Length: 144
Length: 151
Image (tube, rainbow over all chains, first blue to last red; front, side):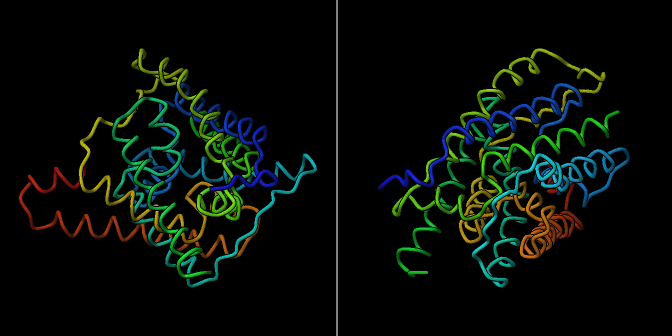
């Protein structure tokens, strides 16, 4: 292992993380809901009374974030190397996996660990391990 | 009001993801590539988010209703089972393939990336497949199975 010091952005990482934490705190303390993206989006596919509007509004906020960021004169750097077939397979796996797991990086990784949930710790260690293993196989064994 | 707060929370969450660099799949894959030139940034994003989250959840735990008088819906303390671990492993596999998890993919879609749109469409299909499978599994079974499927 060697740390890529040119790519490492410690200050914006911590600052951005704290903004994410604030957003989760806002949704929790004002609306009483956990900011788990996969749960919020997935719950829209099972509409119940009073459960659709706030989920759509949260998603609209996510979608409009780049616009607000651009208004501050900044451009979000986004490089998507994966091709369309890989994106389709990966999207399907992320969709079905997060629903069975009951959460993703936000629900388990941020909110679950913040409430010291053993379940979320197991989930986070599992998806991290799978992510590390996948990138290792793709980059260092298959050589893409 | 609930809708407005949800919108502001989503917007703030998305801006946090952008500031942190987490909407960039190349950066996520740089974190997941521990055997290559490793970018530890994502770990610090989690440190920053959890530092704030710990305070918020510690406060929320002592309350039964939110500031708007709504019930605190902290997810139920379920068990650590094959669904949790298996689902997380499948999610991690997809995450490692594309470098996208749900939140950043939706933000990247908002930034106008067609590839993010394809990923999000596939992700919604995967979530829809989950709903379909669970409904199919619980139909024609005893209530015991239904209880398991909705937990």
